Amino acid sequence: MLRIAVPNKGSLSGPAAEMLHEAGYQQRRESKELRIVDPVNEVEFFYLRPRDIAIYVASGQLDIGLTGRDLLIDSGADAEEILALGFARSTFHYAGKPGTISGLADLAGKTVATSYEGIVAAHLADHGIDASVVHLDGAVETAIQLGVAQVIADVVETGTSLRNAGLEVVGEPIMKSEAVVIRRTGADGDDPKVHQFLRRLQGVLVARTYVMMDYDCRVEQLEKAVALTPGLESPTVSPLHNEGWVAVRAMVPAKEAQRIMDDLYDIGARAILTTAIHACRL
Ligand SMILES: Nc1ncnc2c1ncn2[C@@H]1O[C@H](COP(=O)(O)OP(=O)(O)OP(=O)(O)O)[C@@H](O)[C@H]1O
Ligand SMILES: O=P(O)(O)OC[C@H]1O[C@H](OP(=O)(O)OP(=O)(O)O)[C@H](O)[C@@H]1O
Ligand SMILES: [Mg+2]
Picture 1 (tube, rainbow, N blue to C red):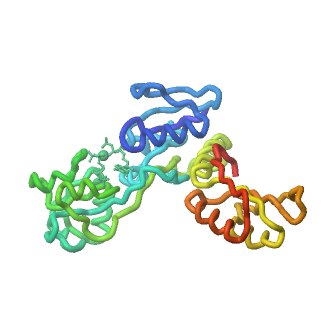
Picture 2: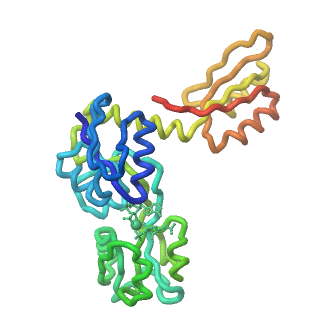
Picture 3: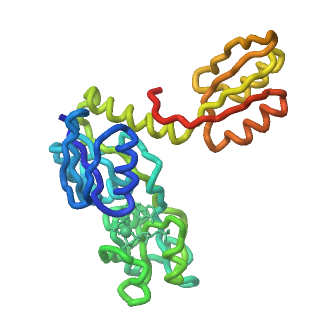
């Protein structure tokens, strides 16, 4: 049975459960459940604090885990990222009161408040900056106003929390994060159960990113049409009953679907339809 760690709370928890559900796995019905077995798929899910997931996976007791890239790196645990999942996207930044800190060098001698001590200590050391780090569990934006630190280092998504606290980012992002699948460093890379799990999640990612496009066009326009919709391998082209016309079917990126439909229409394609993809194995 494959043993998988899933975030039990916070920003990762809802989207992770949704993705697993879309991939055909049974998920818990109540937020208090800490472990469930999906007997059909032979998977056991452990609902753990997102911060602890890399530690459990590194211990070898759990085969894989879903967590944030920043949490993985912060933990320093012996685990590695094997698939990026595209949700819980964020950047990690230093921030301070406007006009007080203009660049990294100004951090010297300051106190930095953060929930991600591992990332911050390593970043400061890499840049040869001598600053203190104070660990706070959350709401670190308030640390400056309350005099616990002169600088913070925290997750930024929309920037609303920083703006509300009257702070602005300092310098370039320390890192970019998103939800990721992890396994123990050097774990058996050929485990077929792990591969099947990853293929299912990749199928969800593709189904979320692409739509299926169908249209009819005249044979003379086919090369131009295919250039607009090259598909993943190559589009399917079938003859229509009316001579001189073909039907074309190809996957296209969902974000570009409307523009591609306009371009196809302009070159004479008609009956252009897009449909959602519910599941996929590439
Ligand atoms: N506002 C946000 N937008 C996107 N991702 C976020 C946001 N806040 C946290 N994350 C990401 O979620 C992960 C942290 O999850 P975690 O559950 O520990 O924190 P949280 O969502 O801040 O929850 P809590 O504050 O309740 O502990 C990290 O990978 C982080 O980058
Ligand atoms: O840029 P934004 O869209 O405002 O998002 C970033 C904020 O979201 C998270 O906070 P959360 O709500 O999880 O509270 P916390 O600080 O207590 O973790 C993070 O720690 C930032 O404070
Ligand atoms: Mg938080």
